[in-house]
Image 1 (cartoon, one colour):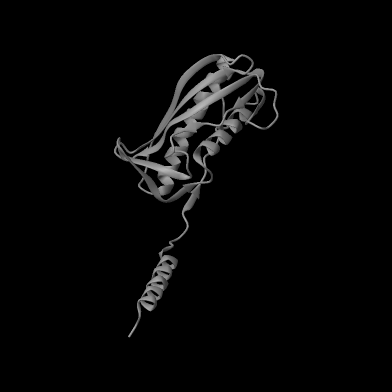
Image 2 (cartoon, helix red, strand yellow):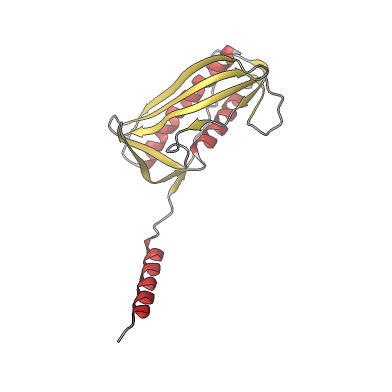
Length: 195
């Protein structure tokens, strides 16, 4: 006859064995790209810029890629993730975009030791695949703040949208990258025109 302890030990072994089997393949890891071509008129500045750490709701403060089947439901792109948490990844690509213009004295992130003239303060509102419309949507609230007196020089909603051409993860992420590049391009041009 098997005692209660033996049954408990056997059950624990099955549970642990089941946990080891459940793991699937690791998710594909995707990156965003910074705009490189700033053809046309782009302002320039001798000011030094700080791209502050972007804020966002917790669903976006993640490596997971957001999909919205409708306005009230949030899911994630199966088998896919960003190379870093989205706010940090986006901040890095924005810094690179300002550098790619060749029209900024210096741009950086907090902790890099720059003597800052202006901060670009960002709140990520949307960065998602809208599966009901078949589009990738990016919306960022941006403020330019004078670092010396804390006054907001200008504020703007910046966005980008791109159609998804296909149903796979690669196509969805490519659309998000296009929407992101459009938003970053707007942000860079707007900021350099204001300071």
